[in-house]
Image (cartoon, rainbow, N blue to C red; front, side, top):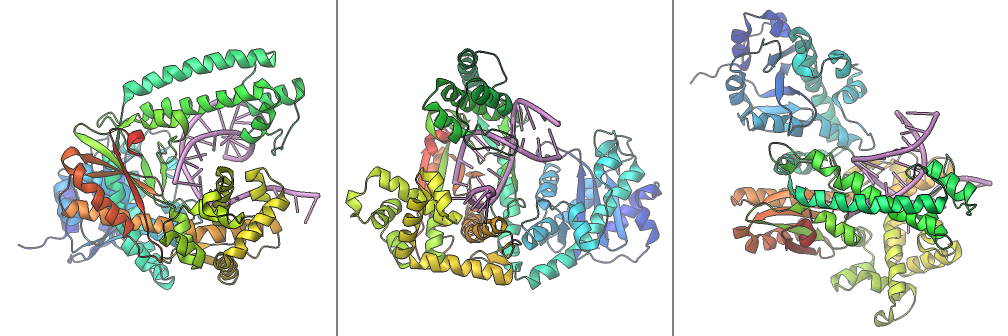
Length: 603
DNA sequence: GCCGTCACG
DNA sequence: ACGTACGTGACGGCA
Protein backbone atom coordinates (compact mmCIF):
# COMPACT_ATOMS: atom_id res chain seq x y z
CA UNK A 1 0.00 0.00 0.00
CA UNK A 2 1.24 3.42 -0.89
CA UNK A 3 2.25 5.42 2.17
CA UNK A 4 0.49 8.71 1.97
CA UNK A 5 1.89 11.78 3.56
CA UNK A 6 0.02 13.11 6.53
CA UNK A 7 0.36 16.57 5.18
CA UNK A 8 -1.05 15.52 1.82
CA UNK A 9 -4.15 14.41 3.61
CA UNK A 10 -4.39 17.67 5.47
CA UNK A 11 -3.94 19.65 2.30
CA UNK A 12 -6.62 17.72 0.45
CA UNK A 13 -8.95 18.12 3.39
CA UNK A 14 -8.31 21.76 3.89
CA UNK A 15 -8.22 23.09 0.36
CA UNK A 16 -11.66 24.59 0.70
CA UNK A 17 -10.50 26.57 3.72
CA UNK A 18 -7.01 28.04 3.24
CA UNK A 19 -7.18 29.67 6.67
CA UNK A 20 -6.79 26.26 8.23
CA UNK A 21 -3.28 25.72 6.95
CA UNK A 22 -1.53 29.05 6.58
CA UNK A 23 1.93 27.62 6.98
CA UNK A 24 1.27 24.85 4.55
CA UNK A 25 0.37 27.37 1.92
CA UNK A 26 3.75 29.03 2.39
CA UNK A 27 5.90 25.95 2.14
CA UNK A 28 5.03 23.64 -0.67
CA UNK A 29 7.49 20.83 -0.26
CA UNK A 30 7.34 17.46 -1.84
CA UNK A 31 5.88 14.90 0.54
CA UNK A 32 8.14 12.36 2.09
CA UNK A 33 7.93 9.65 4.68
CA UNK A 34 7.82 11.15 8.17
CA UNK A 35 10.42 10.02 10.67
CA UNK A 36 9.29 12.32 13.46
CA UNK A 37 6.38 14.58 14.19
CA UNK A 38 5.87 17.28 16.73
CA UNK A 39 2.36 17.77 18.01
CA UNK A 40 0.27 19.60 20.55
CA UNK A 41 -3.30 18.96 21.59
CA UNK A 42 -5.49 21.98 22.20
CA UNK A 43 -8.31 21.14 24.59
CA UNK A 44 -11.11 22.71 26.57
CA UNK A 45 -9.21 23.07 29.85
CA UNK A 46 -6.37 21.74 31.93
CA UNK A 47 -7.80 18.50 33.27
CA UNK A 48 -7.03 15.61 30.92
CA UNK A 49 -9.70 13.41 32.51
CA UNK A 50 -12.58 15.78 31.87
CA UNK A 51 -11.27 17.87 28.94
CA UNK A 52 -11.91 17.07 25.32
CA UNK A 53 -9.74 17.80 22.29
CA UNK A 54 -10.51 20.97 20.36
CA UNK A 55 -7.78 20.61 17.79
CA UNK A 56 -4.34 19.23 17.13
CA UNK A 57 -1.35 21.09 15.78
CA UNK A 58 1.46 19.32 13.99
CA UNK A 59 4.90 20.34 12.88
CA UNK A 60 7.20 18.20 10.81
CA UNK A 61 9.95 20.73 10.31
CA UNK A 62 10.68 24.38 10.93
CA UNK A 63 8.24 26.56 9.03
CA UNK A 64 6.00 23.62 8.29
CA UNK A 65 3.27 23.46 10.88
CA UNK A 66 -0.46 23.08 10.62
CA UNK A 67 -3.53 22.97 12.80
CA UNK A 68 -6.43 20.57 12.54
CA UNK A 69 -9.60 21.84 14.17
CA UNK A 70 -11.69 19.11 15.69
CA UNK A 71 -14.39 20.63 17.85
CA UNK A 72 -14.53 24.33 17.27
CA UNK A 73 -17.72 26.08 18.23
CA UNK A 74 -18.01 27.79 14.84
CA UNK A 75 -18.22 24.44 13.11
CA UNK A 76 -15.23 24.82 10.77
CA UNK A 77 -13.75 21.54 11.82
CA UNK A 78 -11.97 19.04 9.63
CA UNK A 79 -14.30 16.12 9.05
CA UNK A 80 -12.98 12.73 10.00
CA UNK A 81 -9.88 14.18 11.61
CA UNK A 82 -9.08 11.22 13.77
CA UNK A 83 -9.15 8.70 10.97
CA UNK A 84 -6.60 10.86 9.17
CA UNK A 85 -4.16 11.29 12.03
CA UNK A 86 -4.74 8.05 13.92
CA UNK A 87 -2.38 5.98 11.71
CA UNK A 88 0.34 8.57 12.19
CA UNK A 89 0.08 8.56 15.99
CA UNK A 90 -0.07 4.79 16.06
CA UNK A 91 2.86 4.33 13.67
CA UNK A 92 5.75 3.14 15.84
CA UNK A 93 8.32 4.16 13.22
CA UNK A 94 7.43 7.83 13.68
CA UNK A 95 8.96 9.53 16.71
CA UNK A 96 6.57 11.75 18.64
CA UNK A 97 7.68 15.04 20.11
CA UNK A 98 5.56 17.02 22.49
CA UNK A 99 5.56 19.28 25.51
CA UNK A 100 3.81 17.60 28.46
CA UNK A 101 2.96 14.36 26.67
CA UNK A 102 1.08 12.88 29.64
CA UNK A 103 -1.65 15.42 29.08
CA UNK A 104 -1.76 14.97 25.32
CA UNK A 105 -1.72 11.17 25.41
CA UNK A 106 -4.56 11.12 27.96
CA UNK A 107 -6.68 13.32 25.72
CA UNK A 108 -5.82 11.28 22.63
CA UNK A 109 -6.66 8.04 24.44
CA UNK A 110 -10.20 9.25 24.87
CA UNK A 111 -10.37 9.70 21.11
CA UNK A 112 -9.31 6.10 20.73
CA UNK A 113 -5.76 6.95 19.74
CA UNK A 114 -2.93 5.12 21.45
CA UNK A 115 0.34 6.82 20.64
CA UNK A 116 3.21 4.55 19.65
CA UNK A 117 6.82 5.16 18.70
CA UNK A 118 9.74 6.78 20.47
CA UNK A 119 8.66 9.73 22.57
CA UNK A 120 10.41 12.98 23.34
CA UNK A 121 8.89 15.25 25.94
CA UNK A 122 10.49 18.68 26.00
CA UNK A 123 8.89 19.51 29.33
CA UNK A 124 10.58 16.57 31.02
CA UNK A 125 13.85 17.48 29.33
CA UNK A 126 13.60 21.00 30.71
CA UNK A 127 12.84 19.62 34.18
CA UNK A 128 15.89 17.35 34.28
CA UNK A 129 18.07 20.21 33.07
CA UNK A 130 16.88 22.43 35.88
CA UNK A 131 14.63 20.91 38.54
CA UNK A 132 14.90 24.06 40.65
CA UNK A 133 12.75 25.94 38.17
CA UNK A 134 9.18 25.97 39.39
CA UNK A 135 7.56 26.14 35.99
CA UNK A 136 8.24 24.26 32.78
CA UNK A 137 5.37 25.50 30.64
CA UNK A 138 6.06 25.80 26.93
CA UNK A 139 6.06 29.59 27.21
CA UNK A 140 8.65 29.55 30.01
CA UNK A 141 10.91 27.02 28.33
CA UNK A 142 10.55 28.70 24.93
CA UNK A 143 11.54 31.99 26.48
CA UNK A 144 14.61 30.55 28.21
CA UNK A 145 16.09 28.53 25.35
CA UNK A 146 14.81 30.34 22.24
CA UNK A 147 14.07 33.82 23.61
CA UNK A 148 10.69 33.32 22.07
CA UNK A 149 7.88 35.32 23.66
CA UNK A 150 4.62 33.46 23.42
CA UNK A 151 1.37 35.37 23.75
CA UNK A 152 -0.36 34.06 26.90
CA UNK A 153 -3.36 31.88 26.12
CA UNK A 154 -5.44 33.96 28.54
CA UNK A 155 -4.72 37.00 26.41
CA UNK A 156 -5.56 35.17 23.18
CA UNK A 157 -8.79 33.88 24.68
CA UNK A 158 -9.81 37.17 26.27
CA UNK A 159 -13.27 36.65 27.71
CA UNK A 160 -13.87 33.40 25.81
CA UNK A 161 -14.49 30.43 28.07
CA UNK A 162 -12.19 28.00 26.27
CA UNK A 163 -10.17 27.26 23.15
CA UNK A 164 -13.15 25.89 21.21
CA UNK A 165 -14.67 29.38 20.99
CA UNK A 166 -11.59 30.90 19.38
CA UNK A 167 -12.01 32.01 15.74
CA UNK A 168 -10.32 29.47 13.54
CA UNK A 169 -7.58 31.70 12.17
CA UNK A 170 -6.50 32.75 15.66
CA UNK A 171 -6.66 29.17 16.89
CA UNK A 172 -4.55 28.07 13.96
CA UNK A 173 -1.80 30.60 14.44
CA UNK A 174 -1.70 30.00 18.18
CA UNK A 175 -1.66 26.21 17.96
CA UNK A 176 0.75 25.95 15.04
CA UNK A 177 3.16 28.19 16.92
CA UNK A 178 3.10 25.78 19.87
CA UNK A 179 3.94 22.76 17.73
CA UNK A 180 6.70 24.59 15.92
CA UNK A 181 8.17 25.98 19.14
CA UNK A 182 8.27 22.50 20.62
CA UNK A 183 9.92 21.24 17.47
CA UNK A 184 12.67 23.82 17.74
CA UNK A 185 13.18 23.15 21.44
CA UNK A 186 13.67 19.44 20.96
CA UNK A 187 17.17 19.47 19.43
CA UNK A 188 18.44 22.16 21.77
CA UNK A 189 17.22 20.41 24.91
CA UNK A 190 18.38 16.95 23.89
CA UNK A 191 21.87 18.15 23.08
CA UNK A 192 21.98 19.60 26.58
CA UNK A 193 20.65 16.39 28.15
CA UNK A 194 23.40 14.50 26.39
CA UNK A 195 26.06 16.98 27.50
CA UNK A 196 24.86 16.76 31.10
CA UNK A 197 24.81 12.95 31.12
CA UNK A 198 21.07 12.89 31.74
CA UNK A 199 19.90 10.80 28.78
CA UNK A 200 19.65 7.46 30.55
CA UNK A 201 17.71 8.99 33.45
CA UNK A 202 15.51 10.59 30.83
CA UNK A 203 14.89 7.62 28.53
CA UNK A 204 14.99 4.84 31.13
CA UNK A 205 13.01 6.50 33.91
CA UNK A 206 11.22 9.77 33.24
CA UNK A 207 9.87 8.99 29.77
CA UNK A 208 8.57 5.47 30.57
CA UNK A 209 6.96 6.90 33.68
CA UNK A 210 4.64 9.05 31.55
CA UNK A 211 2.42 6.11 30.63
CA UNK A 212 2.51 4.73 34.16
CA UNK A 213 1.27 8.05 35.54
CA UNK A 214 -1.28 8.43 32.76
CA UNK A 215 -2.72 5.03 33.69
CA UNK A 216 -2.78 5.93 37.39
CA UNK A 217 -4.58 9.20 36.72
CA UNK A 218 -7.02 7.54 34.37
CA UNK A 219 -7.78 4.76 36.86
CA UNK A 220 -8.55 7.09 39.78
CA UNK A 221 -9.66 5.85 43.18
CA UNK A 222 -13.08 5.00 44.53
CA UNK A 223 -14.63 6.97 47.39
CA UNK A 224 -17.45 6.23 49.79
CA UNK A 225 -19.49 9.42 49.39
CA UNK A 226 -22.09 8.35 51.92
CA UNK A 227 -19.38 7.93 54.54
CA UNK A 228 -17.84 11.29 53.63
CA UNK A 229 -21.20 12.92 54.20
CA UNK A 230 -21.43 11.26 57.60
CA UNK A 231 -17.97 12.47 58.58
CA UNK A 232 -18.82 16.00 57.44
CA UNK A 233 -21.85 16.11 59.72
CA UNK A 234 -19.82 14.75 62.62
CA UNK A 235 -17.16 17.42 62.11
CA UNK A 236 -19.79 20.14 61.73
CA UNK A 237 -21.18 19.14 65.13
CA UNK A 238 -17.79 19.21 66.80
CA UNK A 239 -16.92 22.57 65.26
CA UNK A 240 -20.16 24.22 66.33
CA UNK A 241 -19.66 23.09 69.90
CA UNK A 242 -16.01 24.18 69.90
CA UNK A 243 -16.92 27.58 68.47
CA UNK A 244 -19.33 28.23 71.35
CA UNK A 245 -16.74 27.18 73.91
CA UNK A 246 -14.05 29.32 72.28
CA UNK A 247 -16.19 32.48 72.15
CA UNK A 248 -17.12 32.03 75.77
CA UNK A 249 -13.50 31.48 76.85
CA UNK A 250 -12.43 34.53 74.82
CA UNK A 251 -15.22 36.68 76.22
CA UNK A 252 -16.19 37.80 72.71
CA UNK A 253 -16.89 36.54 69.18
CA UNK A 254 -14.08 36.68 66.64
CA UNK A 255 -12.88 34.90 63.51
CA UNK A 256 -11.05 31.85 64.85
CA UNK A 257 -9.48 31.26 61.43
CA UNK A 258 -7.74 34.61 61.47
CA UNK A 259 -4.30 34.32 63.09
CA UNK A 260 -4.36 38.09 63.45
CA UNK A 261 -7.64 38.20 65.41
CA UNK A 262 -6.63 35.14 67.41
CA UNK A 263 -3.34 36.80 68.32
CA UNK A 264 -5.21 39.83 69.61
CA UNK A 265 -7.44 37.65 71.81
CA UNK A 266 -4.59 35.53 73.19
CA UNK A 267 -1.90 38.15 73.70
CA UNK A 268 -3.70 41.51 74.04
CA UNK A 269 -7.03 40.59 75.66
CA UNK A 270 -6.00 37.57 77.73
CA UNK A 271 -2.40 38.76 78.17
CA UNK A 272 -0.90 35.34 77.52
CA UNK A 273 2.83 35.24 76.88
CA UNK A 274 3.68 35.42 73.15
CA UNK A 275 6.13 32.85 71.87
CA UNK A 276 7.74 33.25 68.48
CA UNK A 277 6.82 35.99 66.09
CA UNK A 278 6.15 35.77 62.37
CA UNK A 279 6.84 38.44 59.76
CA UNK A 280 3.36 39.79 60.27
CA UNK A 281 2.78 39.46 64.01
CA UNK A 282 2.36 36.95 66.79
CA UNK A 283 2.76 33.32 65.86
CA UNK A 284 -0.18 31.13 66.76
CA UNK A 285 1.08 27.84 65.38
CA UNK A 286 0.90 24.40 67.01
CA UNK A 287 4.08 24.76 69.05
CA UNK A 288 3.03 28.12 70.47
CA UNK A 289 -0.51 27.01 71.25
CA UNK A 290 0.67 23.77 72.86
CA UNK A 291 2.89 25.76 75.18
CA UNK A 292 0.04 28.15 76.03
CA UNK A 293 -2.34 25.22 76.51
CA UNK A 294 -0.45 24.31 79.67
CA UNK A 295 -1.78 27.43 81.38
CA UNK A 296 -5.09 28.23 79.64
CA UNK A 297 -7.98 26.29 78.18
CA UNK A 298 -8.56 28.56 75.17
CA UNK A 299 -5.43 27.64 73.18
CA UNK A 300 -6.17 23.96 73.80
CA UNK A 301 -9.65 24.36 72.31
CA UNK A 302 -8.24 26.41 69.41
CA UNK A 303 -5.96 23.46 68.62
CA UNK A 304 -8.93 21.12 68.55
CA UNK A 305 -10.87 23.54 66.41
CA UNK A 306 -7.98 23.89 63.95
CA UNK A 307 -7.62 20.12 63.63
CA UNK A 308 -11.28 19.56 62.85
CA UNK A 309 -11.52 22.61 60.60
CA UNK A 310 -8.55 21.41 58.57
CA UNK A 311 -10.00 17.92 58.21
CA UNK A 312 -13.38 19.25 57.18
CA UNK A 313 -12.35 21.94 54.69
CA UNK A 314 -9.29 20.35 53.12
CA UNK A 315 -10.48 16.74 52.95
CA UNK A 316 -14.01 15.79 53.92
CA UNK A 317 -15.78 18.68 52.19
CA UNK A 318 -13.27 19.13 49.35
CA UNK A 319 -13.06 15.54 48.11
CA UNK A 320 -16.68 15.10 46.97
CA UNK A 321 -16.32 18.14 44.71
CA UNK A 322 -13.48 16.43 42.88
CA UNK A 323 -15.33 13.23 42.08
CA UNK A 324 -15.52 12.81 38.31
CA UNK A 325 -19.11 12.70 37.12
CA UNK A 326 -18.52 10.02 34.54
CA UNK A 327 -16.30 7.64 36.50
CA UNK A 328 -17.59 8.38 40.00
CA UNK A 329 -13.96 8.32 41.14
CA UNK A 330 -11.28 10.80 42.16
CA UNK A 331 -8.57 11.35 39.56
CA UNK A 332 -5.58 13.21 41.01
CA UNK A 333 -2.85 14.77 38.87
CA UNK A 334 0.66 13.49 39.40
CA UNK A 335 3.06 16.21 38.42
CA UNK A 336 6.41 15.03 37.17
CA UNK A 337 8.14 18.41 36.87
CA UNK A 338 7.56 20.19 40.16
CA UNK A 339 9.96 19.10 42.87
CA UNK A 340 13.61 20.05 43.08
CA UNK A 341 14.61 16.57 44.24
CA UNK A 342 12.92 14.31 41.68
CA UNK A 343 9.90 13.36 43.70
CA UNK A 344 6.43 13.47 42.19
CA UNK A 345 3.82 15.83 43.49
CA UNK A 346 0.07 15.38 43.50
CA UNK A 347 -2.70 17.93 43.15
CA UNK A 348 -6.44 18.39 42.59
CA UNK A 349 -6.69 16.76 45.04
CA UNK A 350 -3.31 16.20 46.63
CA UNK A 351 -3.53 12.47 47.34
CA UNK A 352 -0.08 12.48 48.94
CA UNK A 353 -1.13 14.32 52.08
CA UNK A 354 -4.32 12.51 53.02
CA UNK A 355 -4.43 12.25 56.84
CA UNK A 356 -3.08 9.01 58.28
CA UNK A 357 -2.30 9.73 61.94
CA UNK A 358 -4.72 9.28 64.76
CA UNK A 359 -8.36 8.31 64.88
CA UNK A 360 -9.35 10.77 62.17
CA UNK A 361 -6.56 9.62 59.89
CA UNK A 362 -8.17 6.17 59.82
CA UNK A 363 -11.63 7.65 59.41
CA UNK A 364 -10.57 9.65 56.37
CA UNK A 365 -8.46 6.93 54.75
CA UNK A 366 -11.45 4.69 55.32
CA UNK A 367 -13.45 6.57 52.68
CA UNK A 368 -11.08 5.43 49.92
CA UNK A 369 -12.44 2.07 48.89
CA UNK A 370 -11.79 -0.73 46.44
CA UNK A 371 -14.14 -1.39 43.53
CA UNK A 372 -16.58 -4.29 43.65
CA UNK A 373 -14.87 -7.68 43.87
CA UNK A 374 -11.51 -5.97 44.44
CA UNK A 375 -9.24 -5.11 47.34
CA UNK A 376 -6.69 -2.38 47.94
CA UNK A 377 -3.10 -3.43 48.44
CA UNK A 378 -0.57 -1.02 49.89
CA UNK A 379 3.15 -1.66 49.60
CA UNK A 380 5.62 0.63 51.31
CA UNK A 381 9.38 0.76 51.63
CA UNK A 382 10.65 0.47 55.17
CA UNK A 383 13.11 3.21 56.27
CA UNK A 384 13.89 3.90 52.64
CA UNK A 385 15.80 7.14 53.06
CA UNK A 386 18.01 5.84 55.87
CA UNK A 387 18.81 2.73 53.83
CA UNK A 388 19.74 4.94 50.91
CA UNK A 389 21.88 7.09 53.17
CA UNK A 390 23.63 3.91 54.36
CA UNK A 391 24.34 2.93 50.76
CA UNK A 392 25.49 6.39 49.69
CA UNK A 393 27.80 7.01 52.64
CA UNK A 394 29.00 3.40 53.08
CA UNK A 395 29.03 3.86 56.86
CA UNK A 396 29.94 0.49 58.37
CA UNK A 397 27.63 0.72 61.37
CA UNK A 398 24.62 1.82 59.34
CA UNK A 399 25.14 -0.88 56.71
CA UNK A 400 25.57 -3.55 59.36
CA UNK A 401 22.40 -2.44 61.12
CA UNK A 402 20.31 -2.79 57.99
CA UNK A 403 21.93 -6.08 56.98
CA UNK A 404 21.01 -7.49 60.37
CA UNK A 405 17.57 -5.95 59.98
CA UNK A 406 17.58 -4.52 63.52
CA UNK A 407 15.34 -1.64 64.60
CA UNK A 408 17.44 1.28 63.37
CA UNK A 409 16.14 3.86 65.85
CA UNK A 410 16.71 1.54 68.81
CA UNK A 411 20.20 0.85 67.57
CA UNK A 412 20.97 4.57 67.17
CA UNK A 413 19.60 5.16 70.67
CA UNK A 414 21.82 2.47 72.14
CA UNK A 415 24.79 4.16 70.45
CA UNK A 416 24.17 7.77 71.39
CA UNK A 417 23.13 6.92 74.96
CA UNK A 418 25.71 4.14 75.40
CA UNK A 419 23.24 1.53 76.64
CA UNK A 420 22.60 -1.96 75.36
CA UNK A 421 19.74 -2.17 72.82
CA UNK A 422 17.45 -4.05 75.20
CA UNK A 423 17.83 -1.27 77.78
CA UNK A 424 16.77 1.54 75.40
CA UNK A 425 13.75 3.42 76.75
CA UNK A 426 10.92 4.56 74.51
CA UNK A 427 11.99 8.13 75.17
CA UNK A 428 15.56 7.42 74.09
CA UNK A 429 14.25 5.73 70.97
CA UNK A 430 12.12 8.80 70.20
CA UNK A 431 15.18 11.03 70.50
CA UNK A 432 17.19 8.69 68.26
CA UNK A 433 14.43 8.66 65.66
CA UNK A 434 14.53 12.44 65.56
CA UNK A 435 18.31 12.32 65.21
CA UNK A 436 18.11 9.83 62.34
CA UNK A 437 15.64 12.03 60.50
CA UNK A 438 17.70 15.06 61.34
CA UNK A 439 20.76 13.57 59.70
CA UNK A 440 18.89 13.24 56.39
CA UNK A 441 17.70 16.84 56.63
CA UNK A 442 21.13 18.33 57.39
CA UNK A 443 20.93 18.42 61.15
CA UNK A 444 21.90 21.48 63.20
CA UNK A 445 22.10 21.78 66.99
CA UNK A 446 19.41 24.45 66.94
CA UNK A 447 17.07 22.43 64.76
CA UNK A 448 17.45 19.30 66.86
CA UNK A 449 17.02 21.26 70.09
CA UNK A 450 13.77 22.76 68.79
CA UNK A 451 12.50 19.39 67.62
CA UNK A 452 13.24 17.73 70.94
CA UNK A 453 12.63 20.62 73.30
CA UNK A 454 16.15 20.41 74.73
CA UNK A 455 18.94 22.97 74.88
CA UNK A 456 21.11 23.54 71.80
CA UNK A 457 24.07 22.46 73.93
CA UNK A 458 22.53 19.09 74.71
CA UNK A 459 21.52 18.72 71.06
CA UNK A 460 25.02 19.56 69.98
CA UNK A 461 26.43 16.86 72.25
CA UNK A 462 24.06 14.28 70.81
CA UNK A 463 25.00 15.21 67.26
CA UNK A 464 28.74 15.07 68.02
CA UNK A 465 28.24 11.68 69.61
CA UNK A 466 26.31 10.43 66.58
CA UNK A 467 28.94 11.58 64.10
CA UNK A 468 31.72 10.11 66.25
CA UNK A 469 30.16 6.71 65.90
CA UNK A 470 29.23 7.19 62.26
CA UNK A 471 32.32 8.63 60.63
CA UNK A 472 31.04 7.40 57.27
CA UNK A 473 27.99 9.63 57.55
CA UNK A 474 30.06 12.61 58.67
CA UNK A 475 32.58 12.17 55.86
CA UNK A 476 29.82 11.73 53.30
CA UNK A 477 28.13 14.96 54.39
CA UNK A 478 31.41 16.87 54.23
CA UNK A 479 32.18 15.39 50.83
CA UNK A 480 28.70 16.22 49.50
CA UNK A 481 29.01 19.85 50.57
CA UNK A 482 32.45 20.01 49.07
CA UNK A 483 31.21 18.59 45.78
CA UNK A 484 28.32 21.02 45.76
CA UNK A 485 30.70 23.93 46.30
CA UNK A 486 33.04 22.95 43.50
CA UNK A 487 30.49 21.74 40.92
CA UNK A 488 27.48 23.83 41.87
CA UNK A 489 25.18 20.82 41.98
CA UNK A 490 24.60 17.48 43.73
CA UNK A 491 23.50 14.18 42.21
CA UNK A 492 21.40 11.14 43.03
CA UNK A 493 22.56 7.56 42.54
CA UNK A 494 21.08 7.61 39.05
CA UNK A 495 22.67 10.91 38.10
CA UNK A 496 19.72 13.20 38.65
CA UNK A 497 21.15 16.65 39.29
CA UNK A 498 20.01 19.41 41.57
CA UNK A 499 21.85 22.72 41.22
CA UNK A 500 22.60 24.37 44.58
CA UNK A 501 23.02 28.01 43.58
CA UNK A 502 23.55 29.46 47.07
CA UNK A 503 26.19 26.97 48.19
CA UNK A 504 28.96 29.61 47.99
CA UNK A 505 26.84 32.54 49.16
CA UNK A 506 28.39 35.04 51.55
CA UNK A 507 25.04 35.14 53.36
CA UNK A 508 25.39 32.61 56.17
CA UNK A 509 21.70 31.72 56.29
CA UNK A 510 21.45 31.23 52.56
CA UNK A 511 24.64 29.18 52.48
CA UNK A 512 23.64 26.99 55.41
CA UNK A 513 20.22 26.40 53.89
CA UNK A 514 21.95 25.47 50.64
CA UNK A 515 24.14 23.00 52.53
CA UNK A 516 21.09 21.30 54.00
CA UNK A 517 19.55 21.08 50.54
CA UNK A 518 22.80 19.58 49.24
CA UNK A 519 22.77 16.93 51.98
CA UNK A 520 19.10 16.05 51.60
CA UNK A 521 18.66 16.11 47.81
CA UNK A 522 20.76 13.01 46.96
CA UNK A 523 18.96 10.97 49.62
CA UNK A 524 15.41 12.10 48.89
CA UNK A 525 16.15 12.10 45.16
CA UNK A 526 17.58 8.57 45.09
CA UNK A 527 14.48 7.34 46.92
CA UNK A 528 12.44 9.06 44.21
CA UNK A 529 14.52 7.40 41.47
CA UNK A 530 14.08 4.04 43.18
CA UNK A 531 10.31 4.08 43.45
CA UNK A 532 10.01 5.37 39.88
CA UNK A 533 12.01 2.34 38.69
CA UNK A 534 9.78 0.07 40.78
CA UNK A 535 6.65 1.67 39.30
CA UNK A 536 7.87 1.08 35.74
CA UNK A 537 8.84 -2.53 36.49
CA UNK A 538 5.50 -3.32 38.09
CA UNK A 539 3.59 -1.54 35.34
CA UNK A 540 5.39 -3.56 32.67
CA UNK A 541 4.85 -6.80 34.54
CA UNK A 542 1.12 -6.10 34.96
CA UNK A 543 0.84 -5.30 31.28
CA UNK A 544 2.83 -8.29 30.04
CA UNK A 545 1.02 -10.73 32.32
CA UNK A 546 -2.38 -9.29 31.30
CA UNK A 547 -3.23 -8.79 34.96
CA UNK A 548 -6.20 -6.59 35.82
CA UNK A 549 -4.52 -5.11 38.90
CA UNK A 550 -4.19 -1.34 38.66
CA UNK A 551 -1.61 0.90 40.27
CA UNK A 552 -3.67 3.80 41.64
CA UNK A 553 -1.44 5.96 43.88
CA UNK A 554 2.16 6.77 44.74
CA UNK A 555 2.90 8.41 48.08
CA UNK A 556 6.71 8.81 47.91
CA UNK A 557 7.59 5.49 49.55
CA UNK A 558 4.26 3.71 49.14
CA UNK A 559 2.34 2.33 46.16
CA UNK A 560 -1.36 1.62 46.29
CA UNK A 561 -3.02 -0.95 44.02
CA UNK A 562 -6.58 -1.91 43.27
CA UNK A 563 -6.60 -5.66 42.87
CA UNK A 564 -9.36 -7.97 41.63
CA UNK A 565 -10.08 -10.66 44.23
CA UNK A 566 -8.80 -13.45 41.99
CA UNK A 567 -5.39 -11.75 41.68
CA UNK A 568 -5.07 -10.76 45.33
CA UNK A 569 -3.39 -13.99 46.38
CA UNK A 570 -0.46 -13.77 43.97
CA UNK A 571 0.06 -10.08 43.31
CA UNK A 572 1.57 -9.09 46.68
CA UNK A 573 4.62 -11.25 46.07
CA UNK A 574 5.17 -9.81 42.62
CA UNK A 575 4.87 -6.23 43.85
CA UNK A 576 7.22 -6.88 46.77
CA UNK A 577 9.73 -8.54 44.49
CA UNK A 578 9.74 -5.70 41.95
CA UNK A 579 9.97 -3.01 44.62
CA UNK A 580 12.72 -4.69 46.65
CA UNK A 581 14.70 -5.49 43.52
CA UNK A 582 14.34 -2.11 41.82
CA UNK A 583 17.92 -1.23 42.75
CA UNK A 584 20.69 -3.38 44.11
CA UNK A 585 22.17 -1.52 47.07
CA UNK A 586 24.71 -2.47 49.73
CA UNK A 587 21.80 -2.87 52.15
CA UNK A 588 18.63 -4.88 51.63
CA UNK A 589 15.40 -3.11 50.73
CA UNK A 590 12.33 -4.21 52.63
CA UNK A 591 8.76 -3.68 51.54
CA UNK A 592 5.76 -4.13 53.80
CA UNK A 593 2.47 -5.12 52.20
CA UNK A 594 -1.06 -4.66 53.51
CA UNK A 595 -4.48 -5.58 52.16
CA UNK A 596 -7.99 -4.36 52.84
CA UNK A 597 -11.25 -3.07 51.48
CA UNK A 598 -10.31 0.52 52.37
CA UNK A 599 -7.04 2.41 52.28
CA UNK A 600 -7.14 2.56 56.09
CA UNK A 601 -7.23 -1.22 56.28
CA UNK A 602 -4.58 -1.73 53.60
CA UNK A 603 -2.04 0.66 55.08
C1' DG B 1 -1.17 37.23 45.39
C1' DC B 2 1.12 36.58 49.65
C1' DC B 3 1.10 34.81 54.43
C1' DG B 4 0.35 31.60 58.10
C1' DT B 5 -1.06 27.27 59.05
C1' DC B 6 -1.05 22.27 58.73
C1' DA B 7 -1.87 17.75 56.19
C1' DC B 8 1.65 14.11 54.23
C1' DG B 9 6.51 11.50 53.20
C1' DA C 1 23.02 39.37 65.34
C1' DC C 2 20.73 36.45 62.54
C1' DG C 3 17.39 32.24 61.72
C1' DT C 4 17.44 26.99 61.10
C1' DA C 5 15.83 20.48 59.73
C1' DC C 6 14.28 18.33 53.77
C1' DG C 7 10.35 18.05 50.14
C1' DT C 8 5.37 19.12 48.80
C1' DG C 9 -0.24 21.35 48.16
C1' DA C 10 -4.60 23.43 49.97
C1' DC C 11 -7.14 26.29 52.88
C1' DG C 12 -8.80 30.93 54.73
C1' DG C 13 -7.62 35.69 55.79
C1' DC C 14 -6.12 39.91 54.33
C1' DA C 15 -4.16 43.74 51.66
